[in-house]
Image 1 (cartoon, helix red, strand yellow):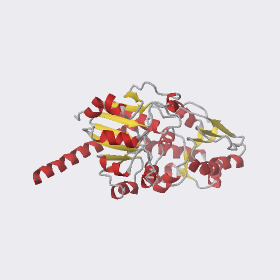
Image 2 (image 1 turned 60 degrees about the horizontal axis):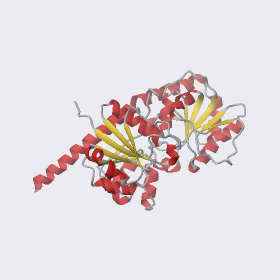
Image 3 (image 1 turned 120 degrees about the vertical axis):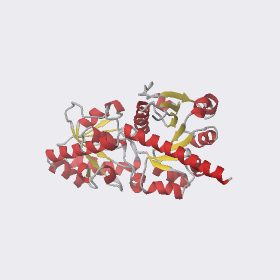
Image 4 (image 1 turned 60 degrees about the vertical axis):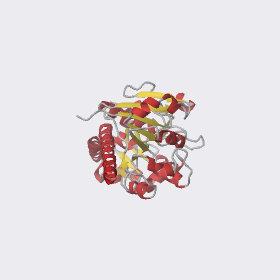
Length: 369
């Protein structure tokens, strides 16, 4: 039987999902690690904008602790950081560069990075405009876990000097994301925080179809949208939707829309957690198009669209039977390969392989000496 691991994560925020998609990814992964028997600690910077919007104050699957300053980490959390089998630093951690420098020599176990924003990170690192990771720090990590797979993993190694790269896509918890008894209210919905580089796609694939189909109902849920957006009368707005309400939200849609940031479209192989959530809830998906999408969702499991006309045709011409068959196939694919449990096992396996690889290198060095 494999010995349970002691793992410390430092991430953007676990306690608050407000404007923070990382929360859902971390919660699913950490909950599944706990179910495997591993001991998990999450260290979160205590900042006002998350403190005022906390929807998970006392998780039952990990030890959640807060810190105020970078200097507190080695001073107040030295024991758990040094004893951990793995310390994992996430993307967008405030003052991440300073934290990485402080902890690189302190940690005795595996030292890892989990990039939930890989294309954004690499663009910023290349311009030396990334405050949570520097180019020189990438080779520090035993494993660089990436939200993005495909060719980006090779680029991390060849261009940025990563020692070992592993894809660690987001996932879904089937216990929390499943079909509810709610009646369908909307023909098409979208869940996502405002992003300038997604707004044109939202305009094209949801707002324009809403204008063309005034008898249909649409919904957009998410925070930080500018006040000057002209929402059609048949588009309902939900300012913030906590994770506990996601399943009911998806269940109330005939279709849900997936939109991808421009940098992640360019990189490909960057599935949003919303894709897996919606599929697990049995809600048919209309997605924008990007390389690698079919490796997660074969053609029979998803609709793709590039124009308002594409969306209009799907909403008006696709039969109900075909719609439900597609949703059923997507759900089966996600439950087979993209649950939190699957990701936790992949994560632990990658750590184990990294330990063995490092041990083999050390043995070769000793033999050569």
